[in-house]
Image (cartoon, rainbow, N blue to C red; front, side, top):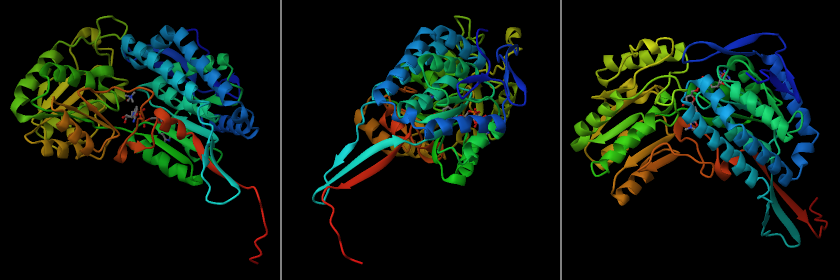
Length: 490
Ligand SMILES: NC(=O)c1ccc[n+]([C@@H]2O[C@H](COP(=O)([O-])OP(=O)(O)OC[C@H]3O[C@@H](n4cnc5c(N)ncnc54)[C@H](O)[C@@H]3O)[C@@H](O)[C@H]2O)c1
Ligand SMILES: C[N+](C)(C)CC=O
C-alpha cells in the first residue's frame, strides 16, 4: 500500500506517542490490510495545541478567502485525479462495492468544489442602522479550532462535509476518523498537504473514541465539535462539550420512514424502496428501512420486494457483479443478528433473509442476508430502533393521516420519503413529516447545495449547503459611530 500510514500533526507525519498500533481488517475476508498508529489523549493534545497555535497566529484566518478557496479547489482536483486509488481504499476498509465508492469519490470532489466556490462569496452585510451618522455591519468569522469526529460507514464522505467548509472559512481543525476505517482520511491528508494547506491548520489523529474523541470533545482549546455517528456517542459528546460551552454540530442516526401510496408508480416505488436501503448493506444513516405501505397494495408490494431481494448477489466489493458487500465487523454482525432475533420474538414475520448466508465463499466475511420483516407494528423494537443493517420493516396504513402519524412516531427525524402520483397529497405529507429531508418519488439523494441534518434526536445543526458553511462561522456585529459626542449622563 502506497500510503504513509501515520498521523499528521503540525505538518508532520508521526507515529503515536505511545508507539501503539492497530491493525485494520478487510470485512470481506478478515485479512489485515494495514497497520496504523493508535494515538491517545497525548496525540490529541499535541494536535489541538498545533491547531490552536495555527489559529491564534492568524495567518490562515486572514489568508484572503479567494486563496483559501483555491486551495480547497485544488484538493477537489487531486481527489478527482486519485479517485480510483481512493475508491479502492474505501472499499478495502468498509467492504462496500467499489462502484459505490467511486460514486462517493465523485460526491466528495463535488463537496470540496462547492465549498471552494462559496469561500469568497460572503463579504458581510451592511445594516440599515437606526442611529444617525453610524455604520453598522455584520461579518462572519471563523469559529477557531474545530474538533471533527467521523463514523465508519461513509468515512471520507462524512469527513468532506466537515473538512471543506472548515478550511474554506479559515478555521483550523483536528479530525479523528473511526478507528476501523482510517485509510481514506490518511490519503486525503496527503492530498491536502500537496494542495498547500499550511502546517498546523489541519491535523489527523488516529485511534479510539473514548480516548481521542473524548479529548477533542472536552478540551477547552477546542471551540467547536462536529460529530457524525450514533445517538449514544452524540449524547456523551454533548455532555463533554459543555465543559467550555463549545459550539456543537451533531449528525446522528435515523430510522427513516418511506410511505408508499397505492397510486404511486408501482415499479418505480419498488425499485426505489430497495435502493433506499440496501446500498452498503443498509449501513446508511438515511436508509429507508421503515416501509409504510398502503393496505390495498401491501401484499403485492411485499411480494415484488421479496422476489427482487432473493436475487441479490452478495460478495466481494471488488467483483463487478456484487450488489451487496459485508457488514463492517464481527461485532456489528452480532448486533444485527440480535436486532433480528428481537423482531422475531416481538411477532414480526421474516418474509426473506433473517440469517447469515450459507454460501461457503462468504463465510470469512461479515455477511448478513437482506431481510424483510412483515406484520410489523409501531411498538416493535425493529420499527423504532436503528438496525444499521440490510433490514426492512413493513407496516400497513389505510389513510393519509395514519401514514403521516406512523412516519412521525419515532425519536428520530433524519429523513423520509413519500411515493405517490398525487402531488398535492405528497406536498401535504412532506409538510407534516418531522424530518430534515423529505424526498418525494425519490429516496436517499443528497448533494452539496442542499442542507443535511436531523430533527429530533437525529441531530443538531446542518451540514452541506450555505448552512453547512455557516456552522463554521461566528457572526459579529461591528458598529461605528462616525460622529461621536459626549452623552453626559453620569
Ligand atoms: N446523520 C448523518 O448524516 C450520519 C451519517 C453517517 C452515519 N451516521 C450514524 O453513525 C452511526 C454509525 O457510525 P458509528 O458506529 O461509527 O458511530 P459511533 O457513534 O460508534 O462512532 C462514531 C465516531 O465516534 C467516535 N467515538 C466513540 N465514542 C466516543 C466518545 N466517547 N467520544 C467521542 N467520540 C467517540 C468513534 O471512534 C467514531 O469515530 C449510525 O447511528 C449512523 O446513523 C449518521
Ligand atoms: C449521509 N449519507 C447518506 C451520506 C450517509 C449516511 O450514513
